[in-house]
Length: 257
Image (cartoon, rainbow, N blue to C red; front, top):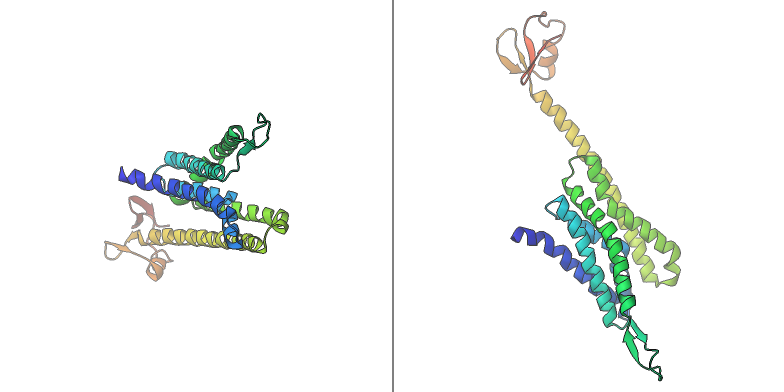
């Protein structure tokens, strides 16, 4: 039970924080708070949250479910906070004075449903990407999953810098630029790490095969590991004739040719 809570509670708690903190910081007067709020409500932040939910998940099924559930909680917290700030207040046209207002439930619910549909489509995908970025045995698949969120960051920040930067504060533009640079650096680091891991795995496999090479020595009549110069000497011009000693790999007898 505790193990399940340790993988379920963190993404839901982080999603609740993001959903509440984004609108609250946006309502504050200040460049720094506005820059932070823009970061918290960005699409790549939601992708990162679903990725994190899958990263700590215990199974593939849990990764998909928690990727969706974390986004549901975040979207709900976001729009409930916006509602408390008066964003869904509409005038009541039945009041002849025109001063009465009412809560626009239709607008509120339509926004929730719209973004929950997006969460249903993208949440499980990001959750599975997070899960396989940790558990995939194939280095190529693991690398692709690890690059999912940085790729979203680069695409979104590039789009915002080209379309919205002129309408935002200078600090917001700097935040987007810095975020994109950080994402590109993470992409480079992940690629280099993956290629290094592949090289080490290949080298380790070759070294392990070399250590397991065992031959029957013609003179001593016993098995000895032959590597380097002794191995070249054994299989060189003075090697035994066919039918003599055999070169063996654990469980496999192969004639020395």
